[in-house]
Image 1: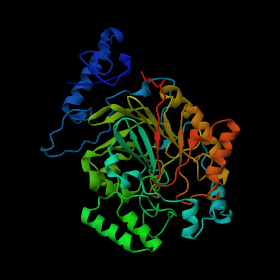
Image 2 (image 1 turned 90 degrees about the vertical axis):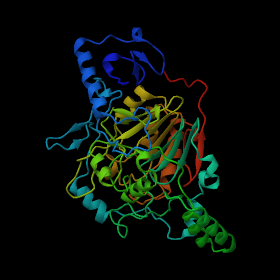
Image 3 (image 1 turned 135 degrees about the vertical axis):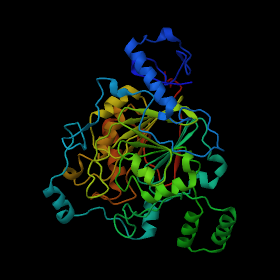
Image 4 (image 1 turned 45 degrees about the vertical axis):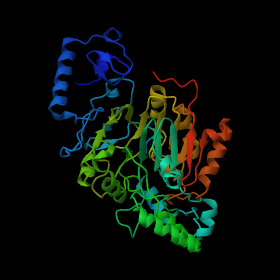
Amino acid sequence: MVRYKGLQWKQCCPSLDCCVCARCGRGAEAMEKPSSSDRAELEERKGLVEDGGEPRGAEGGEVDARTPRKSSSSRKSFRLDYRLEEEVTKSCRDKHGRWANPWPTWRFPSYSMLFRFLFLEKDNSNVPSSKEALDRELPVMEPYFVQNPNLSGSGPGLRVTWLGHATVLVEIDGVNVLTDPIFSQRASPIQYMGPKRFRGPPCTVEQVPIYTYIYFCLLKFFIYSSTFKVLLLLSCQQLPRIDAVVISHSHYDHLDAGSVASLNARFGGELRWFVPMGLMDWLMKMGCENVMELDWWEENCVPGHDDVTFVCTPSQHWSKRTAWDDNKSLWSSWTVLGPDHRFFFAGDTGYCSSFAEIGRRFGPFDLAAIPIGAYLPRDVMKGQHVDPEEAVQIHEDLQARQSVAIHWGTFALAYEYYLDPPLRLREALEQKGLKPDCFFTLHHGESRLISAQDEDVFD
């Protein structure tokens, strides 16, 4: 049985079963009958799916665990493709075939700006070297799923845990989603140079054997050195089950090779990776088997969870990992649509008009993760990083009921004082007449349960 959704059918759900929508039960009379050419195109796509274009199980079908695992990676989206609609801002390339930003708000800093930023501007981040001072201002908390692993299974509802920088664990309608995971000490291709995190990750990826955990707990009980206690605590922590990872772009603070390798070693092909165009080959070289590469406005799902849809949505940024691959891969935000909740991950972005498009199409969102840091000096950062005031504007554009602040308090990537982002966020909310709880910050490792509104009904 093939499930296919194209815009020519004008249906509301991502699956068709003998001209009946499997999710809402509406029949063919609720759809516009396709033309003969559209029917031929559908049959052609059906053949692609049956012949291996879409891996078995990608729409929630059964996969026999005893059979040898094959790669589930794909560049095809056999679910809804919003690119066919005229009013959306589509991705584009420049004359050299590299991805480009289509908005007038985009401007890459000139060489003179970069020279001034690197060599002449004063760095006002002033991150304390004292661990005690950092612990007071930016405490690293033990995540709830470490304190009580029995609570870590994702069930109905929406919960967010900030793991530092742009990494959040979102549990939405039975699916555990990890965003831009970085658990390494440096955002760099090598771990002895490059930006170093001043707040460590609140958990690690790897599972710890029970006897090792007990051993460390006993040591922690008997040894009273605060520094040693923290090291022991971190060594015993671990992530819960992860069903999906979304990657926004290729920069080292958002696509970390060490974290990708650790996640792949632990979860293997059971973990689905959602990436923008141009990154699938890199992940497959890292050994990842289950990669879904999408363009802006394409969507797909996690095998076995076809009621939760992942949509690749626009952002204003750029990409680079080496001296030769500028903008050879796309950048994106991500929209996650569940049966009861909606979540938006902005990734790394400057302000542009597409957030209003996303809000009109998919809002209101129950939760959005929006960056608030790395914004000074403004003339250098404006095109690629929003400041707190623009972050609040994105919150409003998305029609988000609540937003969590990300991309701050972990790496010193720009020149604002390291505690300024949440202060300016609070001021921006006051200027807009918004309540502080509608756009909140979390400590590293802290979680918040997001309550759905009674009127939330998503057709």
